[in-house]
Image (cartoon, rainbow, N blue to C red; front, side, top):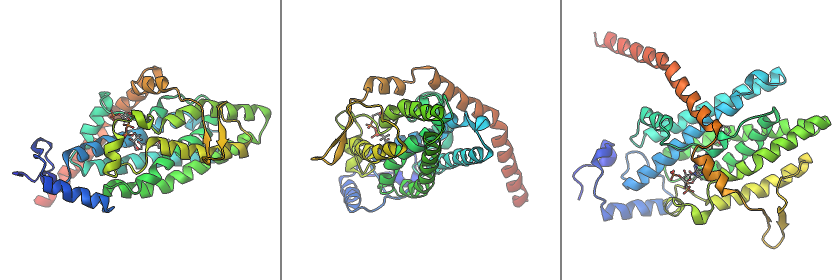
Length: 328
Ligand code: FAQ
């Protein structure tokens, strides 16, 4: 039986012995598509899984600003620069909604940031690839935001209320991101021979990493079964990956570009594209943080955190002074 109502104290050290009655009631609510809210009772594993997934998602949004930030000073026109700047600012906003959603589960922003900087928390593999040409900005919007939306539309119905609500807003912005990326690719694909080559080269380099964003195949995804059962994940990694491929191949055809997969073929009976093998060795190497880009990404985040410490300190000092004045 409970001695401490952990969900309300939000004290990670007071993890309760799980109560079969409460667990059954929780599972019935999830099965009925009810949202679980921060003050509701929840199993400790559910809380931990959400903290892991939401904080990784938040870190992805924040680290995801870096590859595009690389091109801010080199955008080919003022219009493109303004669009890119607005997009990168949106990603910062997404990170903040997600950190706030994770905080409702009893973890602090400092703890999450520290875990990222120390290499204990993951972020999406896709952001460990370098952005070599301007066409990469188009490919990221089209493919990376396109893959992100495919996953996030499903997460609008995730069982944890604050996460689901953050996703609704994020999806609206991501769909604008996807379209601006596709539009940038349209301009390049309809441009000079050199611009078309640049667009094709970007597609060649971003296609396979975008498919890896959905995570390992279902038969090698240790978290999926429980997360699907608790409706944290509404669809499996392979289901979402297949849906992304089905939607994206015709878009590449409309651009006149070629998907870099010789095995790609429409399967009439199954009403889907069959595709070639994904290099999972590469995926796990990137997850492990191998390669120079991963080190640069984390160092950039550590530097930003340290350089901007004075802003946090100034805000805290201001809050303390205001509180002291009010108390006086
Ligand atoms: N990268 O058992 P599963 C964006 C890890 S947002 C790195 O299948 P799960 C916006 C996984 O964490 C992109 N690690 O895990 C934007 C687990 O390790 P752990 C981010 C990965 O959680 C656009 C292990 O492998 N979106 O792009 C990856 O059930 C443009 C086993 O995997 C989200 O985070 C990966 N790709 O399913 C910003 C969406 N995949 O934690 C800027 C929310 C798997 O046990 C510019 N997250 N791993 O040590 C999810 O839907 C899920 O967490 C999955 C993974 C589907 C990513």
